[in-house]
Image (cartoon, rainbow, N blue to C red; front, top):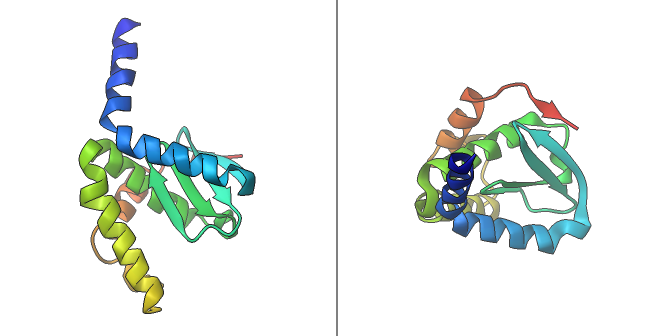
Length: 138
């Protein structure tokens, strides 16, 4: 039992920056959450009017329009796995490039299909698809 507690503490420390940001975002958006679904033991929060999707440690946020679309859930789950792999480096290696890429695509109104072909989005898609376990539950 003590080993499991120590592992949990280590994981919390490993993803601490994302965990703190995810909790803050949850607190800011909690009144706009229209649904919560479980995906591979993680909760996906569907937020009214949310501008896209974001994964911050165990927190996955998506626009409530995506509630029936599995692709963004898999994609953000892929980012969640990147966070587990990279720990404190996630925001620098994945988070910031992903945010910049998203902003460029929105500002210049580029085609979404090409968005997922570049770094770090393609990696997130591959991880989300590879570890997909058909475990979407309400």
